[in-house]
Amino acid sequence: MKVAIPRLRTGLHRKAMRLSPPALLATFYLILAIIGGLALWLPVSHHGDVKFLDAFFTSMSAVTVTGLAVVDTGSAYTIFGQVVIAVLIQLGGLGLMTFAVFVLSAIGISVGFSQRLILREDLNQSSLGDLATLVRTIVVVAVICEGVGAVLLAFIFVPTSGWAYGLWEAVFHSVSAFNNAGFGLWPDSLTRWVDNPLMNLVIPALFIIGGLGFIVLGDLYAKRNWRGLSLHSKLMIVGTVSLILWSWSMFGALEWNNPGTLGALDSVWAKVQASWFQAVTTRTAGFNTIDIGKMHDSTVLMMMTLMLIGAGSTSTAGGIKVTTFIVLLLATVAFFRRTTTLHAFGRSLGVNEVMKVLALTTVSIFIVFVGLFIVSISHDGSFIALAFEVTSAFGTVGLSMGTTTELDTVGRVVIMCVMFLGRVGPLTLGFFLARHTVAKVRYPPGQIFLG
Image (cartoon, rainbow, N blue to C red; front, side, top):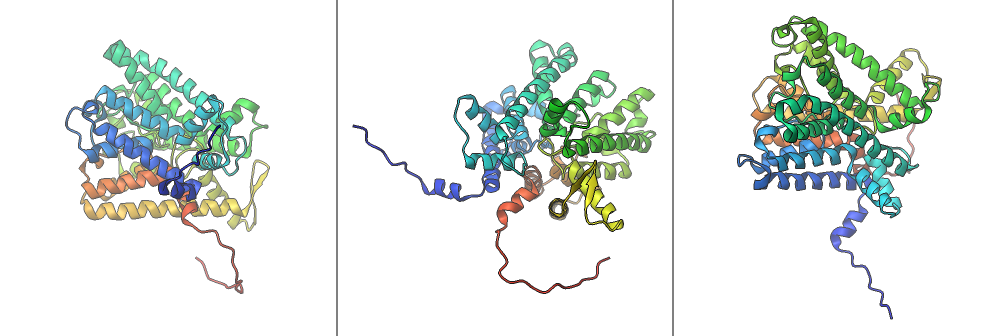
């Protein structure tokens, strides 16, 4: 005779089940960052000079695929610690729920409705749709890209570091690049390969592919022609190419004769390669091949703008996203043309898309300004360097002008919070903080004067 044993639910479990999917997702990421910090704090993970706050900062930076660091990853952490960082980058870049759903599907367990809601928030989707197919696409694309990237990078690292550590360097940087994390194993990032053609091809290719977004990659694989692509894919491709060409030419023009950056390079080809790398790394990648701290203020401001924009939705990158920026431009054009709808590639966008974009941009700017305000109180460094650091943290970029290591405890906590908010997403946080209520009273229309 079988006796049914009732399932016991603790108070913590009941509270977790009452959380909305965005809140639960944010909780998952926070728990992962805490576990990662504890793992990196273990004696086996470092060489004895890493405090818990430093380990937690590194973990948060890895989970949010940012790349900002307060200690040198290559010298402060052991191989075990570096493996922990790589795992955190992979989980944070592709998404915790992506891995969970992939594993459950692989062993034949169906994914429930509540899990699909969380996955929808993790992948920044508006509908539940066939999320399992998207998850499989994400995992397959990641494995292929990171594998190919590691093989190609091995041709650079193995000759200088030997087979064992050289292969590990190739794998680590391939994972870091594809997930737009920007973690490197050298204190000067990739500056020693500033004029290496293979490095300037493989690393940017990885973070551009990872930054396009898995929906775009899946769309390109399925349709394989421009006419059949969705509006989102077309906007992402056009926006990405336009931003890359613009930033590439602008960086070269602004820094060509700067003795601290491009001016220190001997050949035109080396300057072109360095301009290309710095132009695309601002799309939340975080690697650099020149000294970021010696750039002109005008270049710094341009890079801050690009970091705030970021890359694509459902990608490994951060920022407000390219499509958000494009919709902002389209809405501005529509206002001056006195039209009520937005048009792009034969499709129209409604008011809901514009409202979401405005909300996302407003919240993002608010987070950056509040973070900068608090950090500027506790730190007396250069204002533009602080602004660059905070913007890099929010865009989960990881580029630094050297200020991160100089911040006090308050400053580091603020940077961690900004990284977390930048990864989880301002709108995602706003969704579970806001209560959806139906208006019971309607008010007569009013008029305000703008501008």
